[in-house]
Length: 355
Image (cartoon, rainbow, N blue to C red; front, side):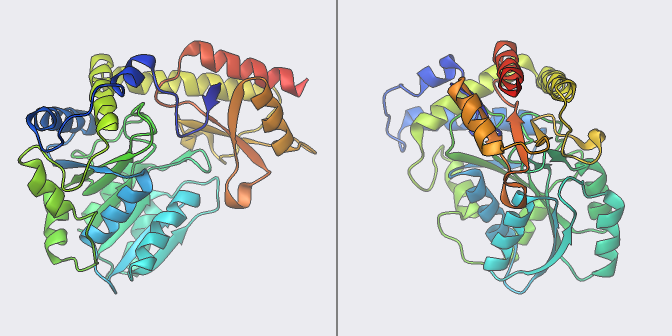
């Protein structure tokens, strides 16, 4: 099956093979030897000297970890949302008692840096800004570098959902001043779901020392302490760590410039082909279209569920719309492992089903 969803994504055979490695003692020398290598390689690809910690959880688990480790109940924060996952990030903070000020954009639009700056100025007592870098529900990438400049010039903590961007799109953690950054294994990292990676700046650790939201499994200070001896606090998903170890080797071999240019090349091809087939892109401005997923508007009188069922019968799985976009768009994932042959097959099936 040609899986063209924005996550989980296809896994290369040589990465899948590493998951068959024998189990080892996660408190023993084998894992203790592997974890620092994985961490150092992640730092290279995060473009950071900050701590990077790995938790056995989905990307959403990483978002919860980010919230509870740097915030306190009653703390006023700004949440920037341009879609389903931005809403989820803010909802997690609300559940734990944060006072959320929302900057919500119409789905299909990005959040502009100037808008974020204005919201902070209107609410100077906020302590942190939560933002989604790449919103897969709408196929829009926020201008994170520009947003970060506005946030950091006002000396606010910046917490970033980079679940579907890091490992695929430019995201310069240190250069842009990103304090907490979360990503997930099932996206551009070419690993099955189940690992989330979180970077923490010195500013984030300072916030952590004062934060009072409850945490146990997701306590990043405990994770950092265990990492000094090559361990995780809780039992890790060993097979996924093996897979991540291999995927990082492959990604470093290709290099960030190669990874980013490959994603742009494939995204340009997909966008051009769907437009040539008579479709329109969902994002309002193409400059903000994501290079990891293309969101496509349904044609008039088009039954998206029937369309996806037919493409699946032809061996290609596209994603549908989420929330308010259910039934009105479909999404083509192109991140991580994206062989040209599979992209071409997906586009051929799309054209054939339309006929």
